[in-house]
Amino acid sequence: MATDDQPANLKFAPTHEWVRLDGEIATIGISHFAQEELGDVVFLDLPWDDAGERAFQAGSHFGDVESVKATSELFAPVSGALVSVNEALRDQPELVNRSPYGDGWMLTLRVSDPAELDKLMDADAYAAFTNESH
Amino acid sequence: MSTESLIFEKGAPGRAIPLLPELDVPERPLDHLIPASYLRTEPAPLPEVSEIEVVRHYTRLSQRNFGVDLGFYPLGSCTMKYNPKINEDMASLPGFARLHPLVDDSMAQGAIKLLYELEQYIAEIAGMARVTLQPAAGAHGEITGLMIIKAYHESRGDIERNVVLIPDGAHGTNPASATLADYTTVELKSDARGGVDLAHLEATLAQHAGHIAALMMTNPNTLGLFDENIVEIARRVHDAGGQLYYDGANANAIMGITRPGDMGFDVVHLNLHKTMSTPHGGGGPGAGPIGVAPHLVPFLPGPLPAKDDSGYFWEDAGPQSIGRVRANNGNFLVLVRAYTYIRSNGPDGLRHVSESAVLNANYIMRALEGEYDLPFNRACMHEFVLSADRQKKLGVSALDIAKRILDFDMHPPTIYFPLIVHEAMMIEPTETETRETLDEFIALMKQIAREARENPSIVLEAPHKTVVGRLDQTLAARKPNLRWTPEREPATV
Figure: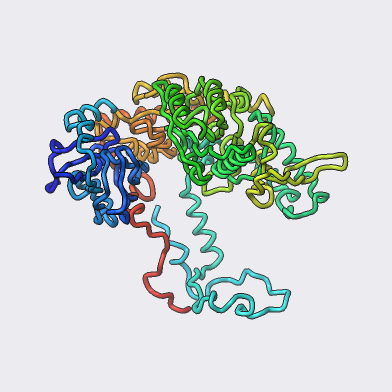
């Protein structure tokens, strides 16, 4: 995972999405823990055709991830207008497994309320959370 | 065993034997019957093989198949019980097997009588007023039941109800059926005992007040646990104006002991290919009849079997019916098999089936709880869910354990379901297995647990004894290749 950021820069939702805030742009993906639990990702349903035309509320459903084990829903960890969706994932869903914090990113949002990030877990709290739930 | 080539790769040009008789009606050119634009310009490259090549090919394939006639098949939630051969004898009787579905009622008295009585048996087992035998499988029963619930609400002018509640451990068909019926699904959380969390139910009912159409539930649930709060759950959902749908996938646990109708359910489906021992797997055919409480009878699909002084007949449904959901009154010969099973067992026999199914599941669960994690440690019903969490920490997953079981001529349990259990292994032995078979499975599972500790590579590299090893399921899902194409063109066309 050479291109990956360290999770220390990230915030995590209890539904296993991560957020990284650069200015007012939030990049969103799913955690290393989540991709490991899912196993090989075989299909993603993301709002590719809605960039620039749609906004999400924190906690709202933005897509689905299907693995060899299960299909899971994806939820926006923060509110904001959809800026872009990772085009590479259309043909290479395996990037979510290979590089969950790097090339496997899913969306960018223009956040409407940066204070929402304070409600999310930091890396340590998330690590404790995932240990506790399993 | 060597690999078996495809039927398309066998044979030689011109070898096909003519099996079809001469036409006894005048022949007409194909393009007089079908528009030319729909006709092939080149013949399809069909296999040209001799009869013995066909027979050997499919016999070899059948020898590689695994079924309940070959070995233990504890595939949780699927109720892979033995299918008694008398069911096949009855379904082969020419009066059933060769009966045209559109024959006049007077020529089909025995068949309609059978369906009339089967409806009564299922109604009694489920505690429902009437039953439609049309749905071809459980999920078909679900969509039929939801359409009936929708028609009921609409008949009362109650058109704001758009939410179906579904517990987080539910079968995937439940939310799929609700979505197909144009409902929004809302998930109900499980509590620490594995049942519906009553506080969450209460909050959810309040949050969607006036919009609750139904709750879909199976009891026992997918953890194999009986939800003792069901009467209270039913009361609260009914008070909120919702109906209760019973997913009968787990009905093998309750026959003759309790009934969905007595628990408060309004619609029930039974999977005859599970509970009533009709053949199962390979895509069907199944049967998923649904029963309904008295207030929903007017909405049932029709026609329904009926009887008067002159005999049995098909009675059309009334004006409120949702209409037919399948042609020709369902998968008739499957229904003949289920009827045979119910009559062979009788009421006491069916109760004994469920008692034995529950006993067998508890026997295995208690024997394995020392070797595997048991997330909900209480008496189970016809199935139970273990977690391979302990083995996963050693690098051996539920999938690896399932693959290792294949080396011992047994079918693995259902894995990674229900989703609320980490590394889930869902084990349903059914009532038809002997004590010896249960003991063999227990010994095998203990052996695999030991291997995971002492020699994990033998589990990680399993299966060792099957025709093929681990197939690349990820590649198959990402880039499905569903059609064989010849590497070279056939020699002649």
